[in-house]
Structure formats: C-alpha cells, structure tokens
Length: 188
Image (cartoon, rainbow, N blue to C red):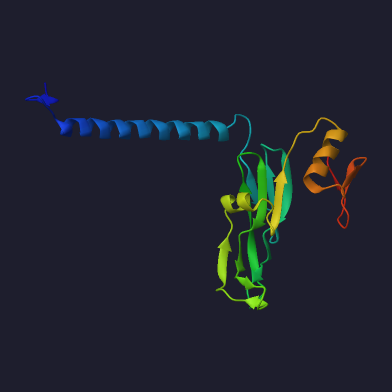
C-alpha cells in the first residue's frame, strides 16, 4: 500500500491529498457564492439600476428593483474640513446596498484632525473617499442621502415608519409629509 511503507505513514501523500481537498473545497465554496450572488442580482424581468446623463448638470438615477427614479446633480461643491477651505466640485456617486438602501453622496471629501482645546486643525489634511462600507458604518452620510424603500400597508404604518425613522417633529398630512424647514414631498 502506497500510504504505508514498512509500517510508517507516508506524510507526503497525506499532505498532497489534504492540500488538494482544501483547493477543491475552496473552489466549490467560491463557485457557490458567485452563483448565489448572480441569482440574487439577475432577477428575471427586472432591469439593472442605471445612471443616465440628462444634461451638463444633471443625471437621472433609476432603480428598477426598488421602483424609483431621482434626478441627481453630476457634481456638488466639495467639503474641505481642513484649513484651506477652498471651494471645488466633487462628483456625486450612487452606492447600492443589497438590503435595499441606496446612498447618494459626494465621491470624496477632505478632513483633518481638529483639536478642541487649541481650536484648530492639528493633523494632516486627508482625502476621504466614500465606499459602500464606509457609508454603511456612517449610517446617515453627512454629505448625502440614504434612501430606504419600504412597503407600507396604510397611512398609519407610513406615519409610524416616518416617526420611528425621523422623529415626532415630522407628520403626515393627507398625501404629503410635512417636514419642518423643508419642502413637503409626496409619498405616492
């Protein structure tokens, strides 16, 4: 028997078999993971999300899976929280979360460490580039929007969702949501 030679275990063969098993098992897991992702993202009859240019200033973002479209600016004034405070334009970027949250935000901003005691910036100015992971961790992006689409059965469920998410200062009146200091918007 090749595995046993003169009563001893041939560790070379066992090591080769073990390495092959790890490679084959890993390959199967990777294939299954990719297959599941493709199955989730390629839903029959539902077009992929897209951003199309409307003109020099605006893009239109359409998310067919969540059922909405929104016009978004191509660029916005950038945020530079460093000493220079120079104005500049930054591209607007759309990030889609697999759980149904869409983040629309600056692509990046500049930040430095602020010392409250000294009342000034003390660290180097760094370019912070947004990613889906950073937006998830931040929750509500300070430079954009987190759009959550939720199916509600009636006005009461909608009102409860709004109050849970945004507080009691916001109320629903008829077919509009009233937000203090903001323009009312329709939810139909």
